[in-house]
Length: 121
Image 1 (spheres, rainbow, N blue to C red):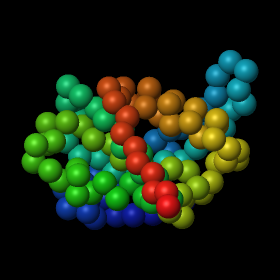
Image 2: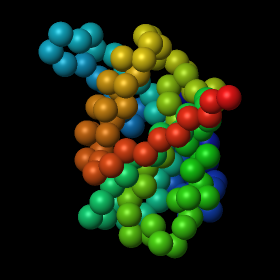
Image 3: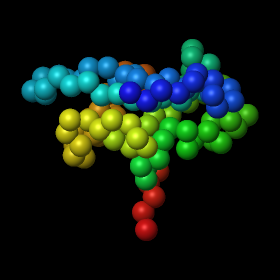
């Protein structure tokens, strides 16, 4: 499990652990996925945006964006993908289950939008 101090990054709230909980559904095996999350903005904001970094980076790669005053009224939730930046990998690390985990997390958080990036040569 990743351990970080809460509030270690300015006004951002860092939460190690299992924000995604146990995932599964019809025709799918139950599995637990751990997500390190970094949050900013009001918990009861009208809009929630899930931020997913690429390039094996952590949720903290969005710290500068999350500190922008123009976004202070939006709930921003950045995550470290399982298996990235030292986080434990999921049981199945292929694209389809990883995409399903991210979609389940976005739905569970009530996200209005999902933003991501990748670093490719």
